Image (cartoon, rainbow, N blue to C red):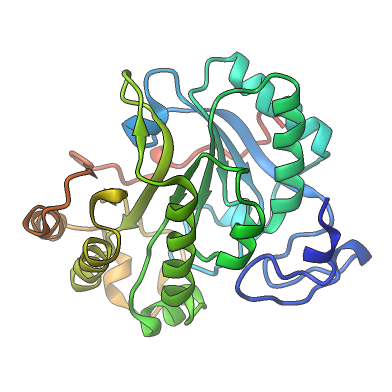
Amino acid sequence: MNEELVNPCRLCPRKCGARRLEGETGFCGARDAVTAARAALHFWEEPCISGTRGSGAVFFSNCNLRCVFCQNDRISREGFGLEVSTEKLAQIFLSLASQGAHNINLVTAVHYLPWVAEALKKARESGLIIPAVYNSGGYESAEILKAFRGTFDIYMPDLKYVSRELAASLSAAGDYPREAVAAIDEMLDQTGPAVIDGEGIMKSGVLIRHLVLPGHTREAISVLRLIRERWGNDVHVSLLNQYTPMPGIEQRCTDPNLSRRLTAREYDKVVNEAIRLGLENVFIQEGSASGADFIPEFDGEGI
């Protein structure tokens, strides 16, 4: 395990300096051991990730962002989860593969990168052959990702904002746009354009997600234009319409739009811009995918 990256901690752009191996916790709240809240087959990702057999999703606890609209507060902010050793984590990966998972889907793992990389190495030495997906909020350090080059086959980052002001007010990370763009540059440099097999399953590549927020279609369109100008069709894009206002959002945020769901008209406006821009590899959600039914049950299953 790469101790100098976590003691003091500099795994993410905050570089908070917490001496985690000595018991300190930083902004994200992560300690000196991996904590995870769920490990199970997940069927609600994009078709090239979930396929027909599901994605082997491991949901890690804690987060380096503070999104006021987060749907996973129980694990991201409150830190619910169970501690797991690297040996046990490797066994979890192998168990998910034995259940038929198309890939190992590492959800919000930035603050556990050294441990996760070690667990993947152990699992691969024991026969794991399916791709590893780095599923990220996008607030990543390109320098750190470079240090783990060769660890992940697929990167699935969010690109939440191009506006520093919006990133600061909604996720407490004003430098998010700069850091996310640099990180995606590094991700694409590592994987190259996507490789899709005969079943339509991604084997390597970058899939950028953007959650369209109600009242913020202009921001979503700016994100799409950035993607088109910087990475073109070398990346896949997923436009999400599943924004769900969580209880207490009115107290955490002064933006009244975030107290409602996205309208079909708003989403269609963003989709039409993706078409106009000539983005070819775009996933679009049909119907509504919002609501508590689409939020996984974080109950320690599989950990």
